[in-house]
Length: 205
Image (cartoon, rainbow, N blue to C red; front, side):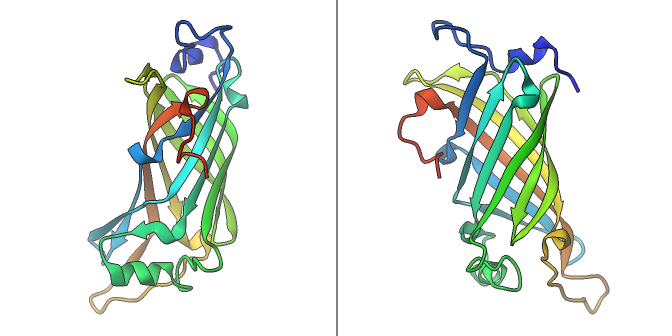
C-alpha cells in the first residue's frame, strides 16, 4: 500500500482555503452522476441498467489515506433496464425483494492509494446479505465551478456475484446455458462536490 505524501496530490487544498487541513469530505452530486450495471443475458447478450436514486460521500484524509472512508446507499426500487416487465420482476421477491429490502449499503473498511488510483475495500449489504467487495476508484483533479464550489470527477468500478447475495433465480435455455449470468459489473461515473461548499444537496440521503 502506498501511503507516502504523493497521495495528497489527489485532493490538494485549493488556494485561499485557509489552514491547509488534510481532511476533507466530498458528497456525490447525484444530479450529475450515474450508477450503471450490466450482466450477461441469454448467453451472448448483456442487460444494461441503472439506479436513479442513490448517493453517498467520500471522507478523504490526505495525510493518512488509509483512514479515509466511502459510504454509499442505493434505493433498489429505482432500478431501470428499459423494460417495465423485467424491472417489475427484478423488484419482486424472486430477485431484489425491494419491499423487504428497499436499500443497499456500502461501507468501506480500508482505503489504499496507488498513484492516481484509490482501492476501496468494504462491505456491501444487499437483500439482507453482507459480503466483502473491492471498488476501484479513479479520481480526477478538483476545480472550482462557476459558483465557486470545488468539484472533482471520479469513476468507480466493481464486480459482484449475485449468487453470493441470494439472487438465485434463473432458467435453463432450450439451446443450452442459462438466462441470466452471475457476475454483475457495476460502474459509477461521479461528480463530487466538497461538503463545505455543497449547501442543500440531493447528495445527502
